[in-house]
Length: 283
Image (tube, rainbow, N blue to C red; front, side, top):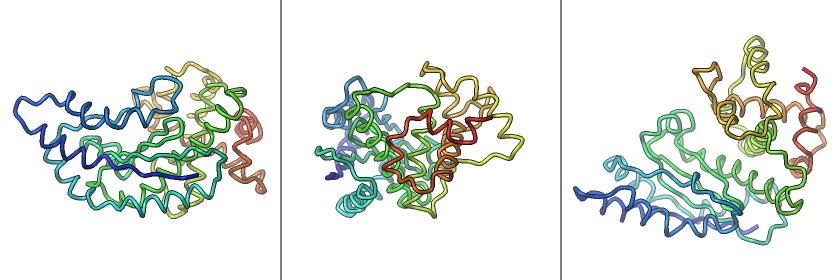
């Protein structure tokens, strides 16, 4: 698959200059300079609205100026080569190029800065958005990892939505957990020295308590309920990104029981089969 890296940083510099005027409309400027020029291409293959994935506007102008001084040095050609090598580890028969759009990320997003090393991503039906805060530590190391994670989502989506026409997709919380678990384990297989903070481990007692909380909603297809269990809700006793942690643990246990299975072969296994083939399907 051909990978194309597209930087939005030149547009961000124009946005920064325009936003410095006292009567600047940040929202309108962000849409004009950072969304409108790229969004039609980003969502080219999307079958329904993806506006909820639009990168958030940045209003902290001094921080953005500092960020752009670092981001202007990003070598998109080297990234493109690196991303192509990642893609080669999980081949796809999709002839369409995958475009990776690089965006700056608001410095006030402390969760991403402190817990995700300043890098977050989104898969958009065949394309990828990677948002970067270069004021975070070690962000350079995590850009390829995040790409690998989002690349896996796109390959999984192509396999199930395009090749299979959506047949076998359940839309349940369990399916979301397992697709995230597969994506993280794929990325970790390429970058074994990087340990994502969102895939925290639990002690035996905590794991048992949390499993009892998430177990009743595993097969719930109401996506409005998924957010709290995937990303956590401290007010309800749900730790940050607990759904990611359990998804990874389920997939890892299944793969340990099937050591001969590749990540490409795992793509064809329905989420419920992975679950039932793991120890979690029996507790």
